[in-house]
Every structure is written in C-alpha cells, then in structure tokens.
Amino acid sequence: MNNDSCLPTADAPCSGLGYPVYVVNATTANDIKQTINFARKHKVRLNIKASGHDYLKRSTAPYSLSIWTRYMFGGYKLHSEFKPKGCKNTIKTTAVTAGAASYVSDIYSHLDQYNLTIVDGMGPEVTMGGYLTGGGHSPISNIFGLGSDQVYEVEMVTPQGEVITANECQNTDLFWAVRGGGGGTFGVLTKVTVRTVPSKPIAVYDFTIETAPNSTAYWESVAYMIAQYPTLANSSVAAFTYLYPNTSAAGLGGDKATLEAVFAIYDPPSSSTLESLLEPYVRQINKTYPDQITTKVASTVFPNFHSMFLKFADDNGAGVDKVVGSWLLPPDTLKENAFGDALVDFLGPAGGRLYMVAGAGVWDAKPRGGGNAINPAWRKALIHAVTSQEWSPLNKIERSAVEHNINNVQVEAFRKLAPDSGAYLNEAWLFYSLCV
Image (cartoon, rainbow, N blue to C red; front, top):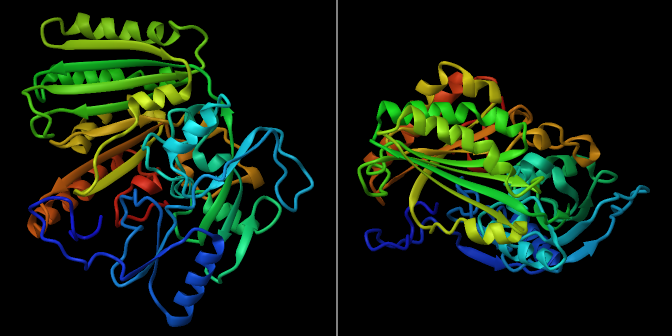
C-alpha cells in the first residue's frame, strides 16, 4: 500500500514518492516523545508504522516523518492477576504486558511455554498495537470477545508528547478510544497489557466443495451450508470460509468452483464433537448433488492454540496493489431469501471470505471501563465478510475499475442486505465511513 512505489515486482518502476522522507527507529517511549515534539514544532506530517500490515495505507505517507516501532517488542511480563496503575481493584485473571509492536507469532510462541494464549489474529507479522486499536478478530473471539475487549491497560505517547498510562481509572477517554478507534489516531502505543487465556485443545474440521464454476449446484450448496452457521455458532463453532465461484478468475487455476470452510471449536467436549456437528450437513450435500459435487474433509484436534496457529498461519506475501471491502452480517441475514443473490454480487468473479468470528463472546463482551470504541455493529454480527481485488502496477484505468466494483457493486450488495450494520475497521473499504 505504498502507492506503486518500489513494489517487489519487475513490472513496477521504483520511486520513493510513496514513502516517508525520514524514519525514526524508535525503541523507547522517549524516542517517540521527542519525534512527536519535533513534528509538532516544525509542523511536519507524522506517520506511525510497526510491521506495516495495513490495508488502509495508514502505515505510510509521502513527505512525512515516520515513527517506526518495529523493535519495540517483547519485554513480556506475566501476571497471575493484574492491578491497573492508579486503581484500587485487582483484575482476577491472568494477563501479559508486552511491547506494542510484538508480533503475533512471537507472543504466541512465548505464551505457549506457560500453556497460555491471547485473543489475536492469524497473520504472523500482525503486531499487538495495530491489531488491538482496530478491534481484532480471532479464531477464539467467538468465545472470549474481540482483541480490543481483552485490553487492561496501555502505555502510550499522546500528540502532545506526553507518555501516559491509560486504563479504567485514569485517562479513561483515551483508554476507551484506543480500543477499536483506529491505529495511530489518538497516539502511539508503546506497551499493552491484555488478558491471557488457557491454551486448550482446538478441534478443526476442514471441509471443501468442488464443482463446476458458477453452477446451480455450487450456489445452492453454498447457500445451504452458510444457512447452518447460526446453528453452529450456538455450539461455539468458529469458521473461516473461502469462496471462489470461478477459481480460474481467482487466479488459482483449474476449471472448478470451490468452497473451503475451516471450522474450529476451542476446548471441545470430545475429540469427535465438531465432526459430529458437521457430518450431517456434508451427507446432505453429497446426497442432493451426487454427481455434481466433490467433497473433501479433514478432521484434526490440535493439542493447543499455538499448534493450530502454526498449521494455519497466513503466509501470503506482500507487495501487491490491492483494495479490500468488508461488511458485518448479523445471523438472521444468512437465512434471508435475498442472501444468495447478495452473496453472488459480493463475491464477484474473484471470490471472497466469510469469517464466522463473532458470536456470544463478542455479543456479550464486557470490556474494562464499561465499553470501548469498536464499531457497535460487531455486537450484533456473526459474519465478517471480506472481498478484495488486485490490479496491475501503475494501471490507473484498471485500478479505477477495481475500486468502483469493490465499493459500488460488491460491498454495496451486503450494505443493502444489512443497512444497519457496518464494517471492521482494519479490513474495510478505504474511503468509506465505517460508523453508521
């Protein structure tokens, strides 16, 4: 997302126009404080970047001074219980304090030795600060809530150059705002303290449908399967669903349409619980379309969250021109007659993803301090639907067509279906107002 500047591809001429002019390699809160004070004094455009994992271009800016927090990681401190600074009460759960730029992969690995984990994402290079300030969904957010709901305290540097602590007892306005209100919006996070949870076994059921592209069998079986999601959610099932109605158009090769749904249950009652829940639906699809659909299943119970993460961590590369769009779907919309047509329009030729990462844990979450700044649409949604398209570097005509289609056709289909909902801040259409 650097405006076609120095992409790692031979067909993109290199230019520095999309990048900051100077970068401060910050390793302490004082480094950040001095940088902010300098930028404010000299009226210099300021930019904040950790790993740079950002669809919305917030981590880079031309003609700017950039604060690079990549090396403000680790420093882990485990807590059997946690008393926020300035508070009289003690929070009676385990927690961990870490540098705000700690990578997901690193903190998972560190906590694994204590049989603990946190609510965080599946991108190894995602950092704590950006993830938490945007909301943060996870394969276990349906159980425990969003990442923003787990935060007990932050240390941050404000735009005034003050190093402060924000929690439910002091700087409560900032504590509310940084938990879901957007990365780099209210200051620069330096440390975060978040709840940890036991790293219990996770059952995973990987289910794939293959059929002819854009066939009636494909769309009917997809609609049937997704209509079961609210029922599955009631049994604490999460799901990551990848839909490609024309895999050739999606660049995956082959002349077939696919649905891959990776279902998961945290701490299942038995090793066969998830399989037992899903097998009736698989049988029904095979029975209804015996000669038109091929189904594949793989069932595994991972001993803990970290082992599951190592298997399914997102290892997609960076350095492409891409725009994403998303919408949060309440459970009732999945059973509406209009859902099937809206899904066809939302996926388009390139396909998309339906992440069932909400549920009771998100709906009933009780963030410290009585609330936080995540989009309230999360509290009613079950599915985070995401679509994306790429274009060739420096091709303005292609880019314009892609951006128009993502916003005005694909995402618009779900906006019309659920007009009172909204989008997930970290994976939203770049130019759309997210709050409704």
